[in-house]
Image 1 (cartoon, rainbow, N blue to C red):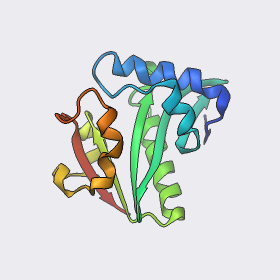
Image 2: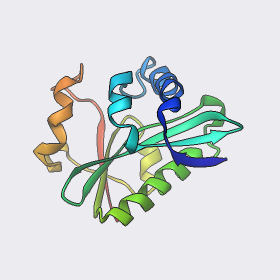
Image 3: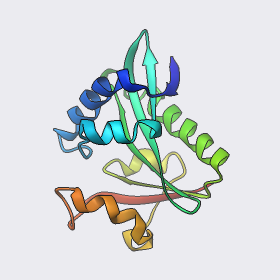
Image 4: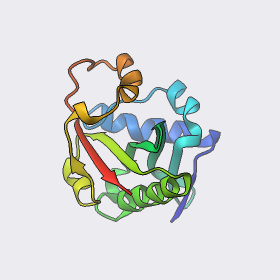
Length: 150
């Protein structure tokens, strides 16, 4: 298993992986445009040349970043790939000087196991919501907000 920063050739595989879950209502969809614009944020898990996992570290404000777009291939669930992606992104966040991570998720149990705690969305700075305006669920977000100090 290789964990590495995404490159342009990964976008189609990431798009397919993320949007397969989005189609089931398990995460928010990501357009190709968004994936290209945030390519530097993406970390992929690759096995035998196939992308089987993805996650993103998105810097949002002073010492604050979001873990988002986390998905693993269905046949690899509970194999530790999601956990490894998150912990790799936590390490990257530490190197950048991030003090607080947050996520908006439909999978709070998973993130709780990784040290994230559920918080009120009101605790997140307004800067966080700038991208939410384009979401079909805005302003009625049904994701769970979670934070982790690092």
